Image (cartoon, rainbow, N blue to C red; front, side, top):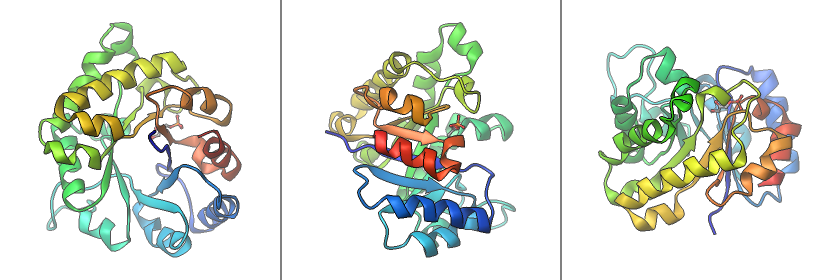
Length: 248
Ligand code: 13P
């Protein structure tokens, strides 16, 4: 039985004051969480997470990482810097970075490798646009996105990452994939992992992301290959995030 992971992606939201209220709210109710819980926050707030979450069962991480080790890369954040703040996770290849920052699947794969080499667990995001879904291309699109990563990591490292299936048309729109639609894609992704490492396919956590909310989390999380959620909007309210955690 795979343990579930509920991870919040705060995106570019938060303030020191608002984060303190949110994290206090989550912490105060979380002693009995039966799943893994994490928040992926803007880099300036990693120090705050380290200070407020150390010693709790909540892990934290970044939302992107540079492929480069260090140097003249203005605006980038190195894996070693995420290590400095005891991050457990880092999101790579979120659709917002693929589309607004032109990140290719090859770049995303290189970032995943960098994260793994640095002891961070990359949460590798894949997902199709509405146009691609309507053209029947969902499996080939997410398959290619995942294959780019699988082709550059060692088989033994497949178990050191998390995959998040995030249909682009469901992100921030209030539209959610039905549990069966999501399950079908998750099964395809798991089969792809199995072709590289059968044992990793058994253990790898494949999260669903895209308007997961308290009122739809339970049925999504009940599906065989849905091992958790990557939560945007609902991770910004302690009550909603906690409700999703309780569904897991
Ligand atoms: P929403 O939950 O706001 O749809 O965002 C999902 C997402 O992009 C998480 O990475």
